[in-house]
Image (cartoon, rainbow, N blue to C red; front, side):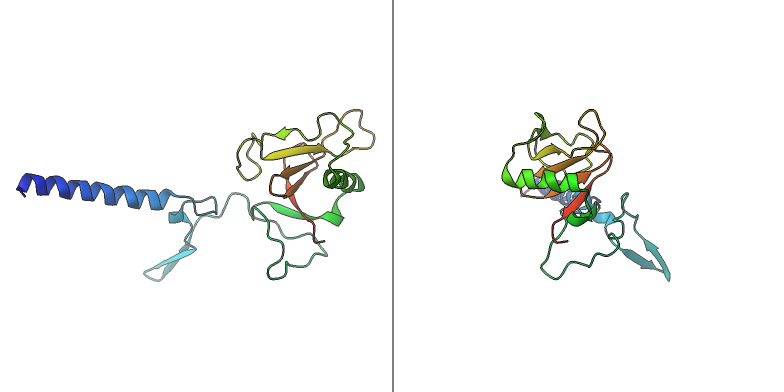
Length: 172
């Protein structure tokens, strides 16, 4: 092998190594942060620094709830707050009952695809989420309350027309 070929091979190996390291550091580890930022703390010369906090910390569970037992319900996105099913308004429980039965629904647009354009729910393929109206007493239209369901069974509640979501915990 000539020295020119060895140099070419060395450069190729270095490029592959740099690409692999960059890919590892930039890949998502499920926390919404790059793996390089997911480290909890680094000690250097007696100084401890912490990584940046996620932009949407998980709020405390609602009062009166108990933590999930081992092997129990696990939220699909820990950054989203959760709400006990029993903490929802009666109209939301009615909507959840209709969803479980497959309808009939009071509004023609119930069951349509929810696009998740604002990316407030975990990112999924188009057609994954569907929305259902929760009747709002006194409202002359559909109101702002909805239940959004995912294809694998998760359910989300919004009382403010998609500005915020809470994942519905059916255990309580």
